[in-house]
Image (tube, rainbow, N blue to C red; front, top):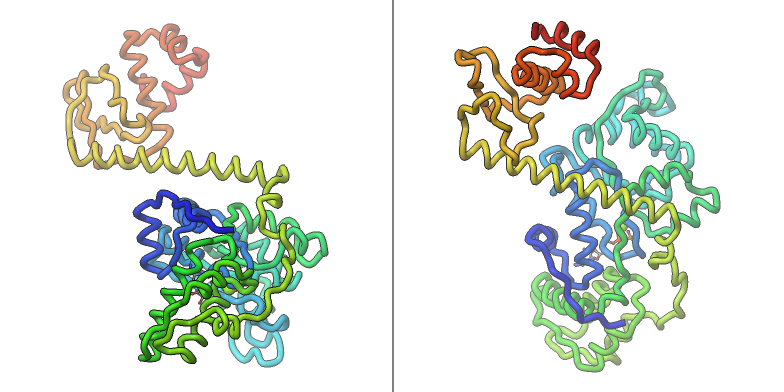
Length: 407
Ligand SMILES: Nc1ncnc2c1ncn2[C@@H]1O[C@H](COP(=O)(O)OP(=O)(O)OP(=O)(O)O)[C@@H](O)[C@H]1O
Ligand SMILES: [Mg+2]
């Protein structure tokens, strides 16, 4: 399927693409980048899914770099490459003597990356025992080193990736369902190369230029029928396969225009489509996916609102670092009242209070005390009227007045 349509790209997404060298403008790819940036500041677990070779490894990096953890460690672990016998120790560490060969204590990645991000690549390959440990860390931040009974704490953001159909892995009993839900609080799906239309030729040209530079050879170009082949091939190995094919053509046909007949030598005969629905939208249509998507959107909306408020508070602070407000004047509309600390210490005029926006310490008690104090002033200290205005019982008001020393 050829897609020529382009999607609006935010400056952050553009920056992420440039920084990591991500090529492509397909809306599905841009949306995936955008989604990674949106979720980055919120400490939720993210699962990146997509066929092999689609470029999943860029996404945990985007999430780390656009999060508050960017100055802390980023550790990438290929769960499929670590033998089953040592994976617990690699991830969670071990104590000296806990098994043959454990000659000293060892820190695991979860301890090493404390405060940062851990990328669990090929997460579906984790043995079931390790899955249980991982679930505990995700739920409580706690883990045990192998051979130890002392619970340790870690503060880590987990981003995982897989090219496996996780729903199937759960159905087959290879992956814990609870862990799957926990890991995939937010899911980012990377589109297969065959669905990226014009991006395919864009990538081929970029790789051709990169390899020409790397091997110091004149660059290859593609004939029209080769470009047609690039667009119609199924790319079971996705971008990784395209990169390999272009690399071979760059070496064997340096400086030439590569025809389809030559290019096809580097591409295995196109296989029939397999596993068509693995990452298609149908998998997202069940109730769980819909509910998760709703929650996801809600969290992002709240996050945006919070960012907006923060921005306004900062602007407010920059404009008017210190000013006087009469007691009865309403707080500025653009500031959440609970964000402003009211300082009573230097109050000489009872009708004037000092609002120092640079000291924005939020406590519920502060705002409650202030609300009661103002209401009492407004009602000349009459408790029945004050309680009515505050919509609390006179008894509660009496208790609060005592508690806050307002009498
Ligand atoms: N959009 C892209 N722009 C430039 N290079 C890309 C892009 N997507 C993928 N690549 C390159 O393709 C190769 C494969 O990407 P990557 O290793 O991220 O795949 P993957 O999705 O993790 O695959 P697997 O599931 O097999 O691990 C890498 O060399 C990567 O740099
Ligand atoms: Mg990978």
